[in-house]
Length: 266
Image 1 (tube, rainbow, N blue to C red):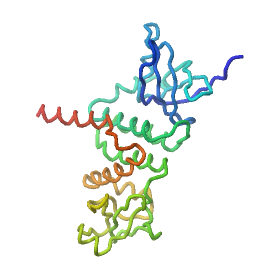
Image 2 (cartoon, helix red, strand yellow; image 1 turned 45 degrees about the vertical axis):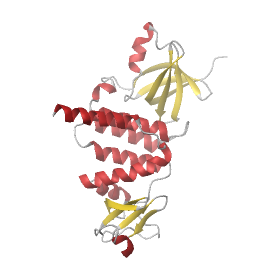
Image 3 (cartoon, helix red, strand yellow; image 1 turned 180 degrees about the vertical axis):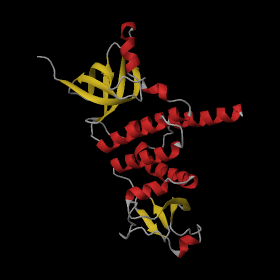
Image 4 (tube, one colour; image 1 turned 60 degrees about the vertical axis):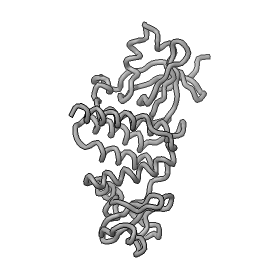
């Protein structure tokens, strides 16, 4: 009796050789979240056309079979017949796309749906294709990821349950949330009215976002200027460490190498 066939839309996050001619592929789909699949014989010469399709950053329609944690690839094709996704990215945009993939690989459990995060990932890839400021789109994606895994801070209310006010200042307390600034904290960090002061560990530094009752507006305000981008990155990096661990991300090394090469060329 033949096994049931499943079909999903998915993105490839990572692949690695398996045995002599196959690959283990990590995918991110709407229906299954992150899951693994074996592509048998993909390293053989006659399978090079299929191998060219199985590349990151392009949404694919995948047919597979199997009930175990490791599925078996049957067929694959691009969801649309545009140029394959990797060709859209180079330099900094490529490093950002790899960073998003690495976050998903490290942060997500297997076989759990993340509908909002899947849409956010697709939106991120689309935005990275356009020239511009990559930092704001990355911070929005990180915040959606943090929300999806249940550790995003509440940007609308402080830890006392009171709405965040535009004329007050706050510090962020890890694993708790935003707390209204008091005099003792003002001695450590300058108080900036209408802003959130970021506190990481024993230090209290930086501006994260202007107080706002609406969470989406708060996110937009948080990402509105260069200083906020820098400090929002410190906030998301601190929170993401809870789910990705302290081991260095390979994509950050790629980013630093790009920056190093830029300085050498100048």
